[in-house]
Image 1 (cartoon, rainbow, N blue to C red):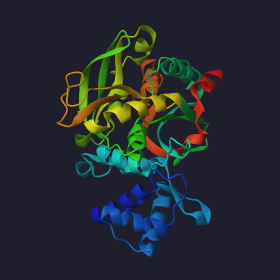
Image 2 (tube, rainbow, N blue to C red):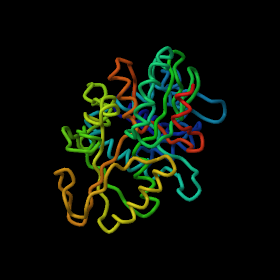
Image 3 (cartoon, helix red, strand yellow):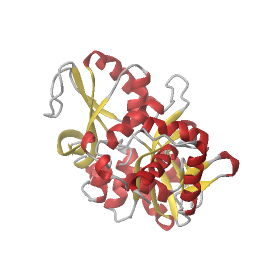
Length: 330
């Protein structure tokens, strides 16, 4: 398949990614125009049929198609040279698309999707629960899906269990709906001492990467999240973000509200115009450090449990999440 045609296929897969329900050719044709790809509905159907045969998409009757895990991998792996900064773009896109309302406590949030072997779930739970107890993840909510089921737009393989953790980009979406734009600058490794943040030891710019930084750090076994949960000292994942200084007081109030409803993730908010952990901020900006939802899964990798992780995997209904304590009772 020639490059131009393959780009059209990838655009179609992108339009399907992150959708909780099947999507038809008409909607896909309109969606991909925002990517600069103009295809008729008939052409989209032709490419979808081809993608079905390749195992990249799956037909759901007359309702349309959903993307498969193989299709998600193709979106992430194709045309890497064109996707530098893709993480930053996806952060902005999902922040805008999520519909969660603080007032109604309803709507969609952003979910990370991790999978472990079905036989490893018990071991994984023993690693995950202490991280939530120590307040080192994104809030206190998650979801587990059994083999052969579906989590968002991902079909769970028959030999795997999917664990959905709330992505910290949900914080961006909440603040955006409250009129506070958030600039995501870095994902990194944060040194903790006596349960307090000391410094970032590694940083990756969101605008210069095609992969979520914490996915990289987890697979590199560069964290010691379990140790931090036990002793208060070690290395965890974290991100550095900025908000307008004028919104600092409002952000502090929202931080407390998020903690109350089980979505706490903001570790610290700095002072307007001043560096936060030696990281400078722009004039009229305030730094903010946020804990990622994948920290509990990092503890699994530290314990030798193999995981597969997809940060910002899908939009998901907040009402279907459960508290981590129920996972510990399972």
